[in-house]
Picture 1: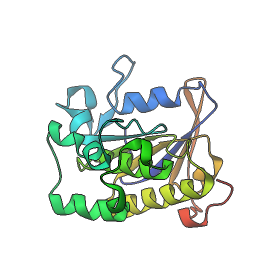
Picture 2 (picture 1 turned 30 degrees about the horizontal axis):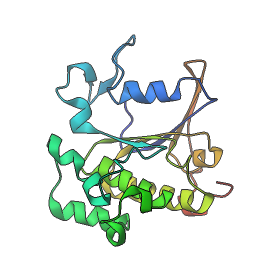
Picture 3 (picture 1 turned 180 degrees about the vertical axis):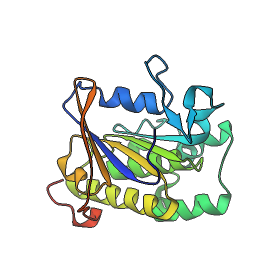
Length: 203
């Protein structure tokens, strides 16, 4: 069952099942035992659950190379449930995309690509943002910038975020940590001494 409006880190060794868990929560993987509940309802019974409620941010950005930045982030409009234009513009400003909207991915830095991927994930006004190693392909400075932006999004819009990561520093900024071992949750705890993203070290 999803926690509400928080930031949750999912951590564990490679191959332990973190990404599989993310895919199940996002409605991509359908073959599993038990139930995943969203708003007290089994996600398998929610029409267009993934399309309406979930956004994905990937480690390798997954942008379309022949489309420019703006064309990439507006792709979800073809699947409906798009937020108002003024809200898109507001989020675009927060992510600092305006200066490179016409550039294609090959001409963008890693941080710029991740900003495009973030807006693409958020443009549907989603309830849940699933982040698979969102800083894994970025340097430390850019990683901090992206985490600061994720934190701002969570605080302003109340978007629930699940962040799969190998980066131990990210544990310090989230509200809850879930540790996976061999396909099972081995530990979970609330973070009572959360550190703001801008103060994180050793990213």
